[in-house]
Amino acid sequence: MFIAFIHNITTTVQVTTVVSRVGRRTAHLIGEQFGPPDGTPGFGPTWSPRPHEESTPLTVHGRHGSLDHVDYPRLVALARDHDVVVHLDVHLGTFIASGQRVGTVWGTAGLDDDLRRAFDRTLGVTRTRTTLQDISFGVRQLVDIAERALSPGIKDPTTAVQVLDEIHVLLRELAMRRTISPYIADGDGVVRVVTQPPTFAGILDLAVDEILDYADNVQVPRKLKAMLEDVRDVARDENLGAVVAKLEELREKAGPA
Image (cartoon, rainbow, N blue to C red; front, side, top):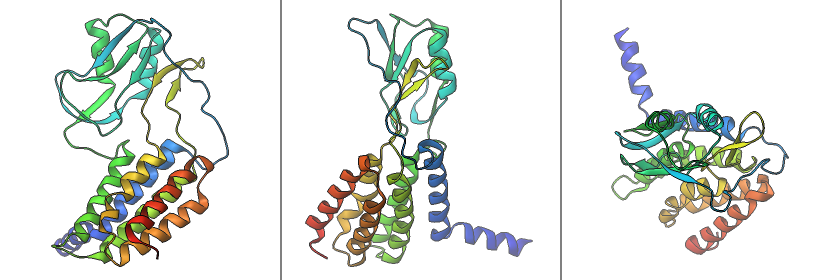
């Protein structure tokens, strides 16, 4: 049992195992949040504040950390029960200090203490980021591993290429999926919450930009080019422009292949 335990620990901390685990979890989140690839256009119901509509700031009190998750069903229910619209200004992973404004509640001039606490409890703020809902954190972890592998003190391009393989899978899955609507409606089709969802372009920037700084490495530009060309070939029209622009940026930094 002791030998099996040691074997399990050493296998678990191997970089290939870590990379694969982060990739699988992030791919699962993509499927949950973006849904399956389909041709459904449009966002459905939208919302914007009316002129001179009453509003009050939404803040977090008594804690600080990263916005790790949001209880969207509870937030929609609270907004419906009080006939308001909650507009979140921050995205998942954003660091929040106690008392910091994180959004606006439209349709009311103020919040009593009970309602403020109820809204506050829908926002999960943690000291350590996780991939409970945050797709960008999974990508951030993969990029960090690639950057360490490519750093002058380590020079491990093989590991960096393995990371890029995982990133390739994630970007390919994202490119085929429609943009997430920022508007969340209640059962009657009335928008109650406006969010800051992840976008393909934003995740593409996060996944590629910092690794592009290592374009002088022989393997990196070649791998990035193959990855981006494949993603371009499967991308939906709404995502295609971001991929084409990133390919042009790669050509400018690395020169013609």
